[in-house]
Image 1 (tube, rainbow, N blue to C red):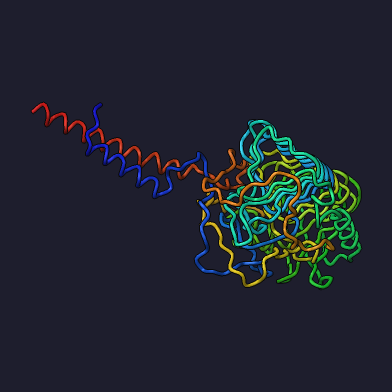
Image 2: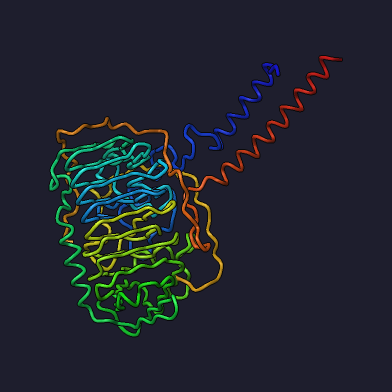
Length: 468
């Protein structure tokens, strides 16, 4: 078919419309927007208690504390999607997605929006960092501020990059030795052990009752300071899937002390908090509940979070190795190995407000300094809200990233964003797909269909005029 200049011009205009709508991009499956400066000129540091954000696409607050800690090795395979916040691995870190694709570190396609400042360390590995062929580790994508771009990576030993490590302008350093690579969190395993022991000594302030697969935690009195404490044997928690918190006073944090060394395996399906279901992304109480709950597995040596639901609250397990396919919402601190291999599972960085060791800590920027932030990426799809049983002592980072003998990347922002190649798995209707592109693709298809039909009619009319 011959295309006239007018037809070509209309086609170009149509493509321009699609581009302006964000329906066509430079990279397939993009979930982030190109970074731009903030318009309000206001730096946002740690959120105040009770004002934790729900799941969204844009960075909201600066947090330099550890989001995820593995005292052993950290392994990503399967179709895992992302780890939000600062990831610290004392042993080796291996990223080897089964079918290849992208794993985001630091910033999530859709998460709490609480993450390290631009240019700060987002991935620290004491041992070797291995990225398998076909896997891309994308660190701090779209994050930019006056302090730098992207996210820095520090590795104690070597980087085996058969796949791709993208730091988006952040520094990448290897051969540092474990202490330097993990600083200032090289002794964080000791911190989580001390905190676990201290919490385990607190007197219970409520009851814990298991009925079927549902565990109900109900406050019956004043807390220990601002902490409501519950106690449940690990053997009793094992196999549970629904968790209900009742009569929790406003502003109080919750610590669930899980006693004994029994292995715990649960598949989270629903979480209720003071009569609201909070494990669905549409819940107004999602961020608040995630930041108030902590499970202290003081003696357990094995922790499994199965299924594809949302686990709400932080995890403190200084003696355990962990295996995750469910998504987590809170700090995740384990003393042993950590493996994540679900379908689209994610970890969202919600600090726990019950301890200064695990709460949000500002980054190195001085308060009052405006910090640019990326524009809002596409919104995540909303999950169903149907009925059912609801839902350190470590140093504060502040030292600029060292300039070791490892390779460095120039601090220039990367305009083309990346996104996970898979979507979270919804088992039982409890988990929404974050960063899902289905709606965008459907809209694009509809627009292209209309344009195609118009183009066909125009061509037929031109043929008729020529034949006449």
